[in-house]
Length: 75
Image 1 (cartoon, helix red, strand yellow):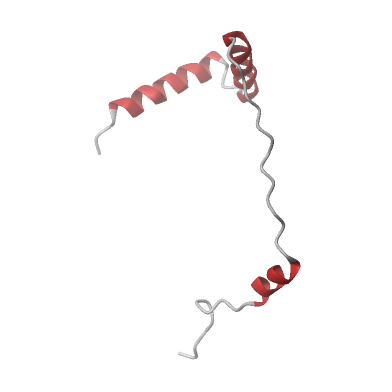
Image 2 (cartoon, one colour):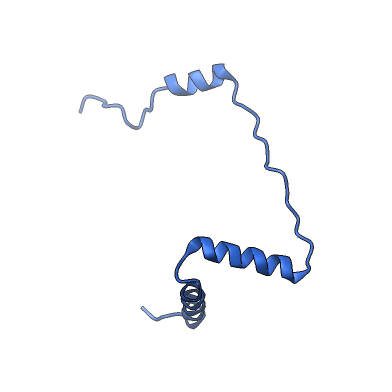
């Protein structure tokens, strides 16, 4: 299988950045946050999306519903 040159370039850049931070994920996070602060761009922090809870009777029906694909038909 041929190696995609763009993928190879991205992987090389990722490896170089990880090496620069001694392969420390926390150091990478701190560095990226510093870069973000220094960029002067507006950072938007959106609130987390709220999901509506499933009604309890729906959840019970889902648990009690048999999985027909997993049931043995006697064969």
